[in-house]
Amino acid sequence: MAKNLKTLRCPICRTIVLAGSEDFPFCSDRCRVIDLGKWASGGYVISSPIHDPDLLDELEGLRDRGLSSSGPGSGDGE
Image (cartoon, rainbow, N blue to C red):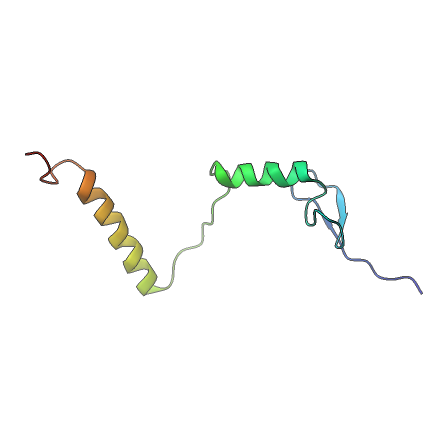
């Protein structure tokens, strides 16, 4: 009886890759580096909304602090 091998297509070049492959889920190190570059350059984004109110408040606080400490009218140097 033949084993049922799990396969997936490489997300970059769409080549079929076996689940046991060294570079899984990519077909090669080249495709892995291309994918990493897309993440690093902002080519990929996670676009789902944040539903956790505590996390949302924390992120808004970080954003407000960043704008108030370096933005115009922050009181620095005036």
